[in-house]
Structure formats: structure tokens, C-alpha cells
Image (cartoon, rainbow, N blue to C red):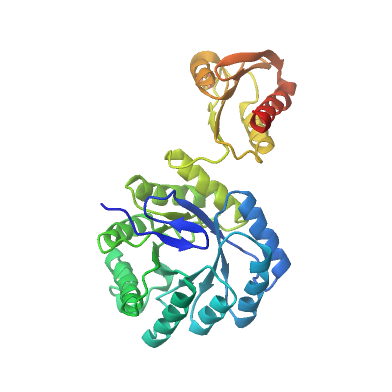
Length: 351
Ligand code: SF4
């Protein structure tokens, strides 16, 4: 399988073997500029590299202009139903458009958007969603991988016939096997960068697992140039989950990766509480480091010696390791988090 083509979103390259890009979407009403800007900044601080905002009406397109003045991360305008909103979003400075072929179906209007986007060098994502698939592509009432691919190809051909090539594609469903198969099929049809996601995945817990399975399968097969984890709730969680997925596959790492023992009858300190507290304390860290928090020497010794930083638990105490060496033996349990976080932060900031 060859590489996908490169498409630039603002200053961020998608595809062509570039690192898989993390993106998310704001949940604030776009017309509330201050709240949206604040959320975009929080997303960016968590490692989000492209942010999408909904543009459901002309006022939102106007708000986009104000939002763009306040933020540095590339902004994608999410467009449904009305191509004039796409034109307005381009005017307002959107760095990318997402068009849904399920509800924007007039070829002339789509070509008009393509032309306006072309003039500004703005890419378009053809975003097919199982929930809004055009009935032309249903099999009876059923959404199939082939139908989703056909829906995408229909719009891609329209854009390409207008000479437009900066195309990104997404095929998303809540159903993981459906999403996986649709993306596999699409990849055989062309080299457009793929935006991966499992849509309407759920709240943080089940949604993160569902997304990790679906996105993870495709990434492991070498598919996917950007990912969006869709979770109900604070979108910062989407970004955290996306990084966890990329880290698990060894594709990219941002901040600490954690090895934490599951605890058992040998455990003599509150491993889960300590790990949670350490994770919170180290949230500002973006340097890739490995951290092990282990209950006893059974597996803990090896993990502690291999990690950049580690806590190896005993009975009501823990020993702190750095780079495989003991640096603080037998620290009382209640002081462990503080001493450990201090040590890591000191080295990350000054090392
Ligand atoms: S590292 Fe020790 S405490 Fe943790 S699960 Fe393994 S045996 Fe139990």
C-alpha cells in the first residue's frame, strides 16, 4: 500500500507518512466566541492539533472570523445542508471544510464550494457518516461498507471533476466492523488522506474503548492520517484518548506513558490512588517519558529498572527510581506522590 497524498490544513500536513494528527471538535455554541476560544485553547494545551467547529448558521460563520483572530491552531468548519455556509466559512478564514455528502447533494453547489476553496488553498474533507448516509447508497435500510464508500466516491468525483485535489476523507459509523471495512475498501480506491473516527462512540469510558478498537485496528494496518475520538462530554477527553491510542501503538507519544500494576494481594500501598495523583500532577508535561508505578518487586523490579522514572511499592512505603537507579529509598506512602512528582518535574524542566 502506497502512502497517502499530502494535504495541508493551515500549517499542519496530513498524509504522506507525516505523523498522525490529533484533532477534536468544540462542544460550545460557535456563536459564543469567548467560550469557544477558551475551549479551543484548552484543547490545544492538551495536544489537539486541528480543531473543528460547527457552523450551523450564518452567525456561526461570522463568529468563526472572530475566533480565528484569537487562536493559532487550524480551524475546520463543519458544514451540513447549506453550501452558502461553506462559502461564508471560507470568507471567514476557515482552514478546512468538512462537507457531508449525505446532506449536501447539489453538484453545482458543491462545485461552487470547490472553486472557492481552491482559490484559497483550503482543503475539503468528504465526511461520510452512517447516520446521515444518502438513501441512494443504502441497501434497503442497511448501511454497508460499500454504500459508505460509494457515497464518498460520489462527492470525491464531483470535487475532482472541478479540478479540486486537496481532499481528505472520513467514513464513520458507530459500528466498529462497518467503519473498519469501509475504510479498508476506500483505501483501495485512492490516496486521499484518511481521517479516522468511530462516531457517536459514547461517554468517556465506553467511547474511548470503542474508539481505541476501531481506530487502533486501522492504524495498526497502516491506515489513517488524522484521528478524532468522538466522546460525549468535555472534548479535552477526546484529545487525551487520541494520544493514548497513538501511544499504545507506538506511533506518537506526548507526555508520560504509564506502566501501572493492576494490584493484587501483595500490594502494600494505594497504587491506583498514587497513579491517579501522579498523572494529575504531571499533566503539564509534554516530553515523552515512561513512568512505572508498581506494587512489589515481582514484576515491579524489572519495570522500575527500565522506566525513566518509577515507584516500586513496599508495605506503606515506596522506593523511587530514576533511569534504572534507586534515588530515594523507602519514602513513606503519604509523601510518595509529592516527592516523585517533584523529582520528575525538576528533571523534565531542567534536564
Ligand atoms: S507488581 Fe506485585 S503487587 Fe503489582 S500486581 Fe504484580 S505481584 Fe501484585
